[in-house]
Length: 463
Ligand code: BES
Ligand code: MN
Ligand code: MN
Image (cartoon, rainbow, N blue to C red; front, side, top):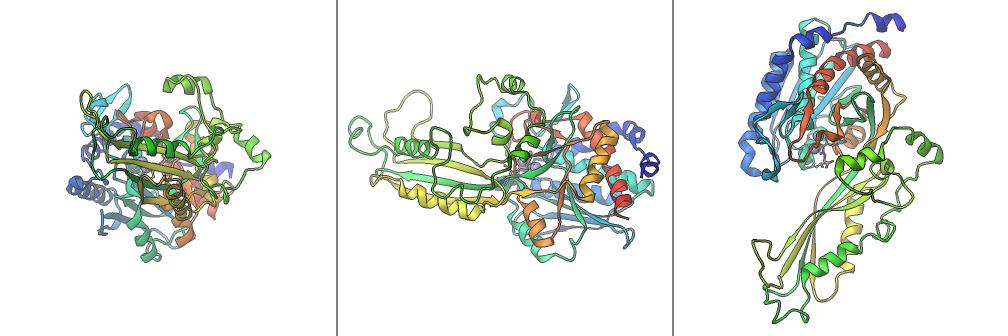
């Protein structure tokens, strides 16, 4: 084994030489505003798909195609080199979150700039930069006739809106997508000098609620005090969803939650976490969350409930005295393994309707959801990823459970029977989904250098 590892080709110098080219191409992709949530960007989303398709062709992939869906297209491509070699399904997404709020960006979201060795643009890290690492790593391997595995690429355009159509595509294309493992770079590491591999994702239940009071907006002096104000009511209802220990009060919410053993929690606590730096970075005086759990646990192994947006009444300049007719909120619940998102959505809905006072009408509309996932650390593929990162970072990566969601990962397991390796190269401080999101040039290039080593180790270790 040791000999095998030491004879592995490193692409460090090639990556360094091609740096400007790699950055330039990624910048071209980042210029395309592929916002999946907003129909206004439909043509741009298609342009991004075509860009990815063309780059896969240029990099040497075969059978590259845009697979149409009722929503945005899926890009598929493959390189089958040997039926005896293992097959890796590489998944990523070319769509991005909406860029709002626009006024908080230091430079426009779709006019990428490189500043302080970071690429600033919507999607830089999540996930265009990380997808593009895979295309360039693949190109290096095909150019050097050094591809040790079969590769299938699946790059979708609806991850940021819940991957609904990809779920159907996976169901209908089991043969086409058959593989030995899924490889995804769409997560983060602890730090550039503390490499880590994500071994868990949370699930998601997302709902929108509408509270209606009187049939029309009212004068808050003439009617205020005698008629229910839907914003006041909604605020109270939301506040009641958590108790003083920040436990969620929805009956049955924790029924399916798997508690970790003390040993597992101790293992988790070994991951470095600097609470002081965490607070400084966010400019908060204290952290907050469920009693009895650490910040790391609160953001990974525990379910949560958060209001993502709340509106109603008058929010314009100055003051208007109004008792509004309606109030709204968007609420997300992050879920942990064994919780089911449809069940949680139903529990939420039943509870929210039950706690509404008679003075208002309440409507709950479910949005997208997804299930949590845990990925094994004793698999050949995980070990290959770990070795690859150890080769390029000089340190063995730490396995950590992540807090975000990638809904398709659970489906890859359920429908295709495939385990996933989440070898991400972002940092939590990259500010994904926020204004001024960025991706380190170091991380981008390190990813391109590391990915070929994954394939090499995986092929060797699978023998
Ligand atoms: N890449 C993220 C998920 C992620 C980020 C996982 C960082 C772990 C660490 C993904 O693009 C994402 O944002 N997913 C959404 C879910 C989706 C259904 C909208 C999320 O987590 O909010
Ligand atoms: Mn992503
Ligand atoms: Mn995202």
